[in-house]
Amino acid sequence: MRLSFNFITLFFFLLINISTSKALIFPQNIFIKKYISNNVNLINDPKIGIVDFRNILKESLTMKKLGKEFIKFEKRLNDKIKKQEKILRNKELKLSSNKNKISDKQYNIEKNNLKKEITNFQKFSFAEKKELNLSFQLIQKKLRDVLASVIKKISKDKNIDFVVLRENIFLINNFDLDLTNEALKEFDKKTSNLKIQFVKKGKKIE
Image (spheres, rainbow, N blue to C red):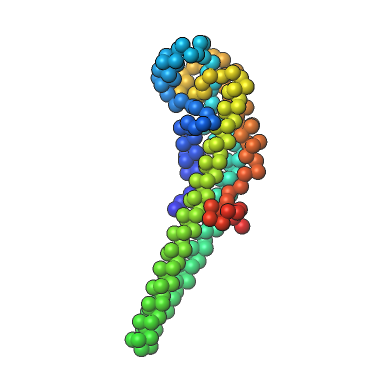
């Protein structure tokens, strides 16, 4: 499993599909027009806000910090796995070289023991990688919820009816509608103390 900051950033683009109880963000202009049209009797002259998710993900201090932490944890785990793999390879080579020096019975015993050790190591590696991946999913969910909450609060304060993605906007004449910078500052403020945690252990990785 290769988890890099680029992969983390790419994964977080799932945030553009936020549609929770905390916020409702439409990714397509056509869908917005249709939605507004269907609800014309409910909303007169709807006010639309704009958010640049790419910019938030690129400039967020929290994203940069967590990205570096994740790479550090991944490297530490990979180094640990590689070290154990080297130990097991050396054991295999040693057993192979001693095959003619020990009895068949002893050889088979040591071979079976080594197989068990390799199997246990493979299970350990899978479990550790899975735990790391789950911790990534956990932090992703927390950040998604925070960002959705931030955008909802800002839009409410500004009496905005809809929030759309800046990448889907052809022309912006009123930059007061752009909530990006305000959302970015509030997002970083609310997530500054957020740490990557192991799901199973329920504590920060040491």
